Length: 90
Image (cartoon, rainbow, N blue to C red):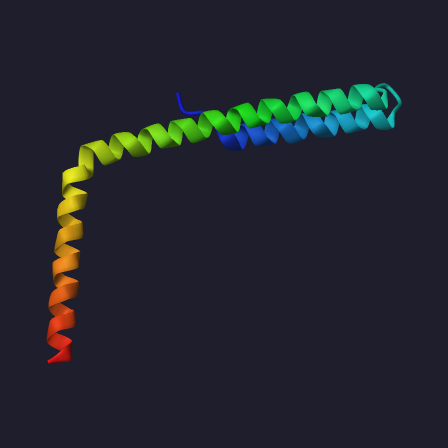
């Protein structure tokens, strides 16, 4: 399943806000705050990596399925550009 990066980011900010409130109320020490922020950042980074890997997998699958069509289209565009270039200089 493709990770929901938007939801992961919202969750990250919500947890960060809760952590800041706890720090402001004196419930969390500065050292604990630093370590928990690092944990939250690591969690979000993991979600981002999963999203990137998922996107890359989808892109590779799509290119494998459509590769010949894309190459054919590229050749057609190149030929049309060459034809226009040759005819515009004459």
